[in-house]
Image (cartoon, rainbow, N blue to C red):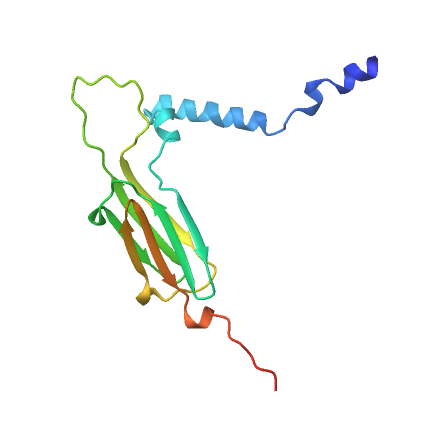
Length: 152
């Protein structure tokens, strides 16, 4: 009976990082109160688009969900091993007297940088926006493609 009480005590199996997480939350709250920071609800939400990154032998593909955005709302840039997608999600303003029952849609600027393992051919990167899905086709650089070696 005594052994069961000792080893079933939840205090023995406490996660050592719980106290650090509590301290971080308290410091965030203190900084917010001192400097008039952003409310915690606004920090937790965001307008980052969900995306998938896939590849085949010659190409990387990035597909991002961007419903309601137009081409002019997006900026896509390619560098040696990365693609940067940034833009602004806009939501039409509601009536000044509107009373929200639920507010889950957020507006604001976003920026995502996707790093890939190989060098890319920045001159041949293509992007297409259709039905709220942004598809970026990123060809791998010739030096990054595998080369078949014949045995003599």
